[in-house]
Amino acid sequence: MPMYAFHCPTCGNEFELFLRPSEAFRGAQCPACGEHTLEQTADGPAASPGPACDLSKKT
Ligand SMILES: [Zn+2]
Image (cartoon, rainbow, N blue to C red; front, top):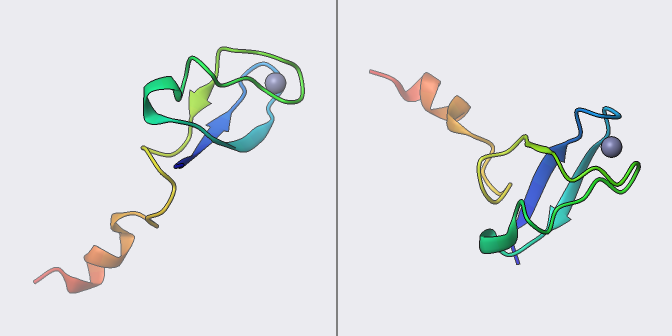
C-alpha cells in the first residue's frame, strides 16, 4: 500500500499514512487534532526523491 505524506494546516503536524490511492484524502485524518482537511506534501507515493537528481544530468 502506498504511503502518502500530509501536512495539517490546523495544527502544523506533518505525518505519513498508508492509504489506497482512491481514498488518499477521504480516509486521511490528522492523528494529532483529527482534522480531515489536509495538504498532501508529496505527489503520490513517497517513494521517489523527486527530480532533483536530474539537474546534474541536464545537458
Ligand atoms: Zn492537525
